[in-house]
Length: 210
Image (cartoon, rainbow, N blue to C red; front, side):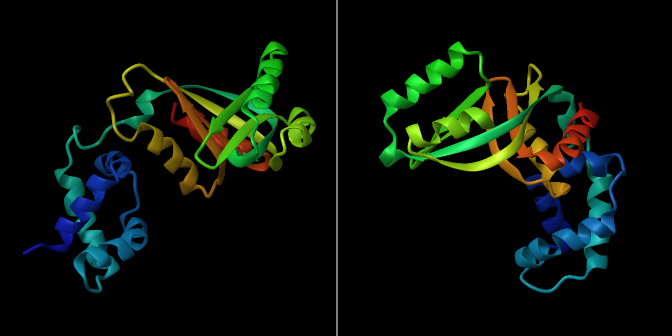
């Protein structure tokens, strides 16, 4: 028979960033129980009390080992900030790639901060707000965000084989209700773009986990 504890253990396995806090006893189990209650009830197929989930969390915590609780913060390095940015969004159907890359090359030659991503339907160009405003008409795009900040976290060597390192960064911010305008990554760094009024809080959270 599958018990509530079994379902809670499965939930923790699917959300490993919580395991570290449970392993060290630095999490409020009743608060977490209320949060995961809908997931556990969905898995069990019936109503489950917060008290039952809290007890199950305590039981699971006592069985966790260091292997279960990955210290994701060990893979986070220095944090850098780029402010005064905007996002230009361009539909693929309207994008002249020659024109786009000419503009990108000009920005590169001017040592302008620039990040671009190309999806199936849209291309996004992130740069200084003044530059983005200038390119809006030329590239037939729409400025979808202004006054945002790019926060780049350098990822330490060894992070690639570890599932969940990037997710850990995103979860830290989501837990504080910090919305992400854009997210980009390269081999050893992750950049999140947030609204300017949440910059200090976001940086403090990521530096604290450095």
